[in-house]
Length: 253
Image 1 (cartoon, one colour):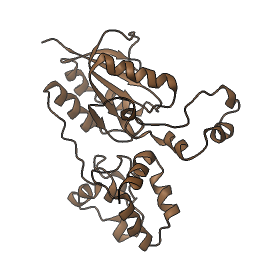
Image 2 (cartoon, rainbow, N blue to C red):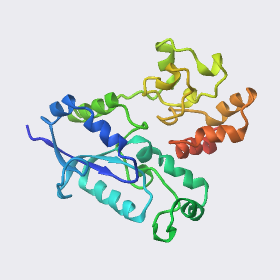
Image 3 (cartoon, rainbow, N blue to C red):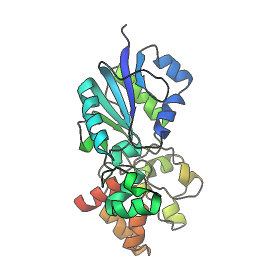
């Protein structure tokens, strides 16, 4: 059987989701029976050439060069998958979308005049067609494994799109929103993390982005009745998936 050529690309990100791939360990060795790593700067010095059966992109679009790069990746690839909050939602760096880039550069960098960047940080899907998005910050190792196996089998991945609350219910984890009044984003957030934070009595921070059909405004009104102001609600949303939550907030009632 001819191996499938896979390319793994990084844009603006912390590399965490690429490390999840490497952390597949023995499973990754099994997958190498079907995949040929044709490009992966995190693990090899191979130059970018030829075409790919599958391209995995981590990171958001924050420079003009990256916009050109994703167009080239799309042209070279049969399928494109984006992984992680940065690639699917703009990442934590998308907080710049609600501020002034010039202001932020001046307070962060000693020589801001040398920084070339777009005024926004956007998901890859706003620039090219993406065949599948794998959300998370970082992504789930189990979900990534399933996606890679499903691609070999030419199946559409069946990753959960329901809310995190479903995971909490199945594990009999007490609801922190109800039991302790903490503003938890679980009702509007995709499952996938294994309910890590609620299992320790902490509210969900929205690492896996808005669930399918999430009504951001309605949930905000529910929190308002418990004393959470709109300003504080925005602060809850403005984390690693800020751009996705805000887009839903202004387009969903």
